[in-house]
View 1: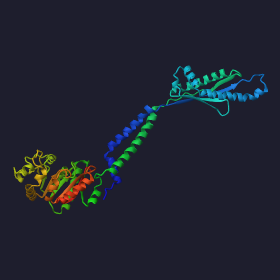
View 2 (view 1 turned 90 degrees about the vertical axis):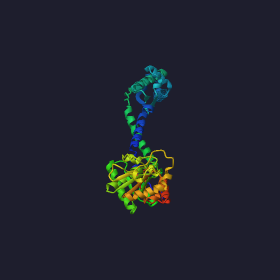
View 3 (view 1 turned 135 degrees about the vertical axis):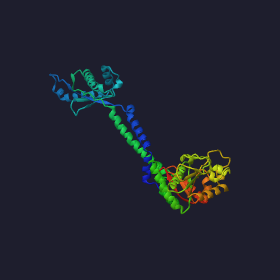
View 4 (view 1 turned 30 degrees about the horizontal axis):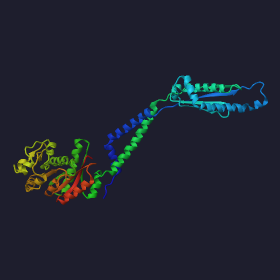
Length: 421
């Protein structure tokens, strides 16, 4: 059975990564908002209208009067041709005392069929746009007058250019910033969906339970305060005791490193002790003494001392700040032998039998099953095995392999706990 990805898991991903989400949106918004300063250049255009006319001599013949319209039209077409030439740009810039590169273009069109020319000047300089258009019309009129002395041509500016209103970068930057936020949102959402769809870690405990035909004993919240976490251990206590079917010994092991088995061991043991039972917690992690630190206990002896034969099991038991909860601490000293070999010894088996008879409940904590053989070594000695997986961190295939290995080692996995929910 393949793991199923639900919409709620995708939503949970975004909830857990809300800070990253905000950072991504902010970066896209800022970058896009600043881009207009580098790439957007405003261009302004102004229009000047001029009327072209030709005088008709008083003694003009009838044929000339009939050709007047054609003559005037040819002058207008000449004006349009001159307006699009580079010479007009250079002459206009010279008259205004500016660099011709500041003038993007000058163009002209005839208004309908009348002898009226609308001249348009384009420039990135808003303050000079109207002056450029007016000066270009003036220069164009002078060139026409010199080019056509007879009949006398007159070019009069009828409508001067209206000054251009400078455009603010703020509005452009705001629009670009909003666009950046939208693009950032789309990219992050798509990225999040892809991450969840391709992620093979445990995110849906219910489907893991169905896939391996095992029980979800409980979940430990990532946030919510100590009271919420303590209540989660009370729920775990009820489920674990019920599924243990009368057995009073539990093995709590991480699937992978730092999945939270130490916290679960302490939480379950404390919950059992608070119910009025006597509980012994054995830290079988001979590579450290993390349980003692979590309980704020300072034991004088350790499990290592018992296994080496330097003291009895009873002498290794120390009290903790939790009433009814006792501890046999692990060890953080360098061992000459492999911890799994010490735990497989007959001495450890006798220790478990002796101490389980003296307490209402016995809980043994071991490090990562996927990394160390300790849990597989001990599994046969206890009545129930509780596996611990971390939400969004423990690979499903690692959990599956650990589950089968513990069964093969003689253990009885009664279920699992998911941490950091």
